[in-house]
Length: 430
Image (cartoon, rainbow, N blue to C red; front, side, top):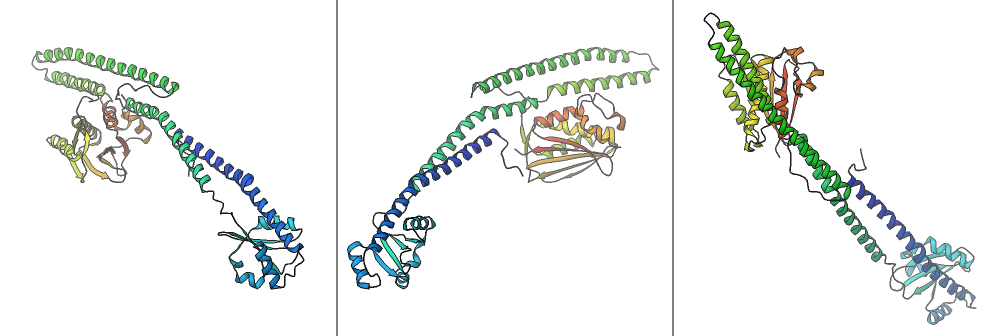
């Protein structure tokens, strides 16, 4: 279990708190050692002198009249053990510090106890005559009230922690914005330039990030323009080839069919290139239900007689997605499943309340893919050819991955224990 925080904010606040705790301990110790303790030593010395004076007087302390006379003259009472217990000795608190100090003052073993109140009452049993308790009231002594000191230290501590919290929060705000923007750029989104604020170092990092983001966006735009231009230019000769095949003499139908099939494959590849660079960011986000999108895609696929789709849809809450882009995800997953895994596909959906996300899965019944190849299937132009004999450009799963990342979701591929591949897509509710 990790105790220390990982973030700079948590570490700074923890450091301030520890330093303040040390400061308070030292302050309490200083006040106790340099103020409270000398005061008690002075009081103890004064009481010891009074005890010595009591025993220096030539009085018979066993005579109640002498003790009463001493009380009227000095306010000091002298009790034997039974009288002391009757007058509140049991309520007095024994103090080791005062007893040891008194023992040194009286040159013998002494017992000092204190009854709090108004006034304070000190009970002393001295070495001169252990049969008697000398009771001395101390007018003007009150409880040592350290609450003002405690309140003062608490206020200083709270203000220091609050000041440190505000300082670190101001320092971390641009870092949080920088982190969020970096995640968005990694997903293919390009937020507005960040506001340059905070310390000079943070401003320099923010400025460098803005320039980097601008450069990456320019590269993405250039790549999209280049791909669109190439795709557009390729369609013209493909169209001419298609027209030329229509003008071929009779008896060459098998040649025409082969050429047209190749042209369709090339058009599909061109469409995949365009889909990969477009990312569908211009499509509006809508609140919809995943089950509805699944039913729409499945309804379009059911027109093909050789396709068998089994669906098991649970009740799921609505999510905000780009409908067209998300239907492309479903359609591409079904296309891969039918192309590489046979004619039977299973679709499931559900809702994870604990993690608060909606999910669906698409499973085929094909030969599966070696585990070491699954991780690389989401890379552009990567195919699982060795296991499944695939054909195409290798952009299908890369397109799916981009769209899912754009929705802050995740997609996983794994081999099903009973055969085939299962693709699982999770989309967060928020």
